[in-house]
Image 1 (cartoon, rainbow, N blue to C red):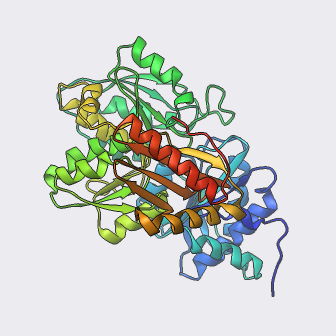
Image 2: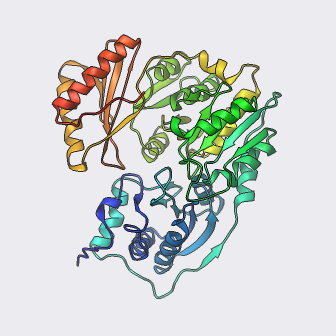
Image 3: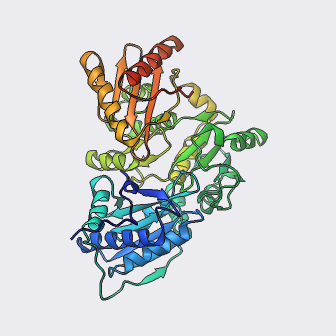
Length: 465
């Protein structure tokens, strides 16, 4: 039997999560149906208790109620952890010893969107496993139980903060830090955590508010950082740290108010990790600056190129038994002293630990890194039915006469730099970036990449810097 399920749209089943317009594509009927399919999926593995959390978005309480209703209808019980960050939800799987759960979050997407991260075991499912949830719905395999699961609420905030504090001991230097939670979930945890480990804290926008009245909660975009930069400069702070809406991504500005890129953060962390673990495999995201694998190799690590996407990176880390990895977008994954999932609060703690054990300013640590001119990660619209073909054509042409890395899209290696083109797994978008050892190199590479994309039938676009 098949079920066309007109209320459940197939395109909301993305690579890493389920995501769509909250009021149109994630209405109560659709979400309850998804919950029932997810409960059916877990039942086949003998899993009968899960945790459920949700971010600060206005639509989240409704969606959370609907997903819980769908899950308990299959006989699975729910531990509702209330409003929480994604890292807190990830940790709840360990805290309660359960092998499933749902985090309701739109992450850093605009307020009208929301989504569902579905866990199996101690990590979220992705790729074909997410498609299996939709197949269960489409084929009418979702089922209810004659005995409903139970629901009870647990506030894990204090225990979660205690766990974070237990894992971070700062050095002798007293730090002043500005924390910008962007009215997301960061304010529930970050200020208290930073104070408990000994920092002077200046708070910005700590009150959760799903309308995001001050700025969009994406601290890796320059346009959302003016308040953080101003507060760092006005208060003579050592650094500023921002969190995205569900607090799994970190953004940082130094003592001068300059934004750090994710690959610069990764190098700071590798400089702490590799002296203790020489020869460690360093999974390097495909969008990273060439300085990162070069410096990792110099420090004694073994670089391994890999795909973008937090679920893909975490899965590769488990496969390789890797100690640490990260993404340019601000996801940081520590498995050397932590659980391996992306927790922006823990990443903040590790950065504070590094700074508290040196007399150097953060800006001085960044100045020691090689720096090459580059574009920003440039995203431009391309229809879902065209974007894969554009990347395929660019790849087919490039591999004929250029060195390429093709683990995720195509990274073309030029004599003095590189250019990347890949598909966004969550939007009808292509993603490009270019870097050169000089301004002239960057201009040559970026122009050539634009030509290749246009010749492959892709849209015209302007590089972002």
